[in-house]
Image (cartoon, rainbow, N blue to C red; front, side, top):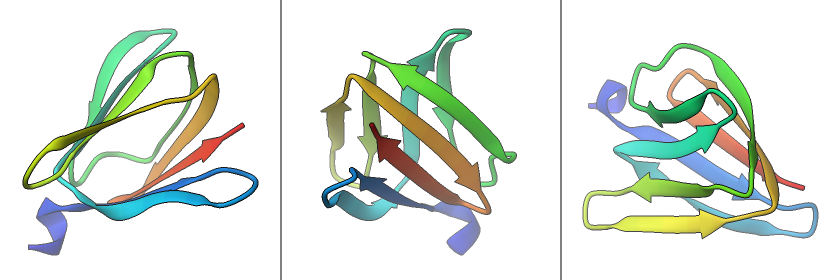
Length: 82
C-alpha cells in the first residue's frame, strides 16, 4: 500500500501549512500542467502563481502561493513556499 500513496508536506519559512497523505498532487509550471502520482520519478520544479491541488481519499484541497518549489523523491512531496 505504501507504494500507492504520497506523503505531502507544505512548509513556509514561518510554519508548516499542511501535512498528510495524498493520492496525487497537480499543478502547472512553465512547461505546462503536471500530476505527481505514487512512484513518480525524482522531480523538482518552481511554481509561480498557479494553484497546487492535493487529492486525498475524501477531497481535493487547493493551495495558492505566489511562488513555491515542489520536490519529489521516494513517494514524498515537499512543497516550500517562498
